[in-house]
Image (cartoon, rainbow, N blue to C red; front, side):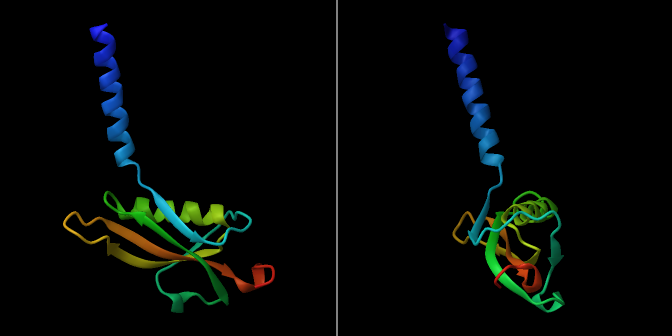
Length: 115
């Protein structure tokens, strides 16, 4: 019985540690038909096509900025964006400030029905 309790405790602690390491991505905006390719820009002036911002993406960058960028791209594909404009890194504030990557999801006007 004691072994069962110890094993359960080990599993519970492991699950807690793993879940705390999982990075989340937040999205606020419209969702459209998923896309397979997303263009990445670092300034709005670099986008040479007419576009509409369809939403905003945020993800933590506590470990690796490239992984954070890839999470943004993957989410952008799922929500139907044609591109993302990486705005930059910001912080949540407070004594335990967490860095996060901000971006805008865009849809090109000639490819967006009714835009």
